[in-house]
Image 1: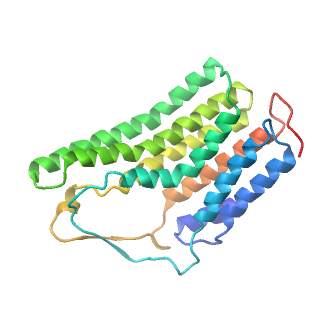
Image 2 (image 1 turned 90 degrees about the vertical axis):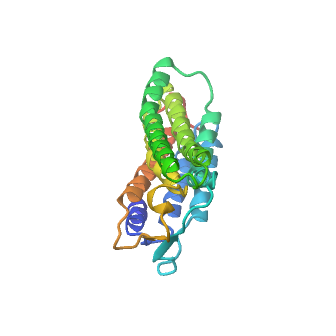
Image 3 (image 1 turned 135 degrees about the vertical axis):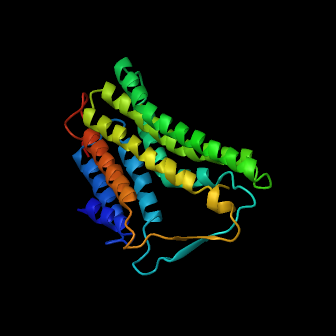
Length: 268
């Protein structure tokens, strides 16, 4: 129910209940502690604590207090090279830390077959990032030929490349954890980690979108206006991303603390 409420709030760009995501993660933490923790016992609570703290930090504002309306884009004079990277890292930083905690806690030898499967699963994410970077680089070079007085193309390309790095790090870390868990017989938890890698796809677009690129309308005289999301302008992709992300966390926790494991859990 908490996941549904949070997803609906994201869909309509207005929270149905501000604490829905926080409560869902708190319930997962309580379930993990009461259901018996895997060795080492600190890993799952530590990972969930990071996610819970980030959910509290990013809790949406109360209904009616958001800044809705017009967003104005002025012509670009220079490129903020780190803008996309900062946006991507802010969006997935807590998830990266949580995955790294689980990965370090469960470190050890991994069977060859799960590693091969994880490598194959990483190809679509890596391919999508490459396609986006190459496509934007082509557009930027075309703009540079028609408007030589615009911002430095090299800075723009560097900004795009940096923008996709957090998403790629998220996908690779999640798939590495999935390979580790699958090799130890924790299939449900491995499925959750693999599902979490899909979050990298929309994150690539979000990170690139945070970079003000000197293409098309951005270099035209005057300004460009855009409408920020409202209840009328639905956001299906962010809402679906939220559902996938929270479902992945659920599978991870249940798979790590439930009965499907090769070694016994440590009771709370």
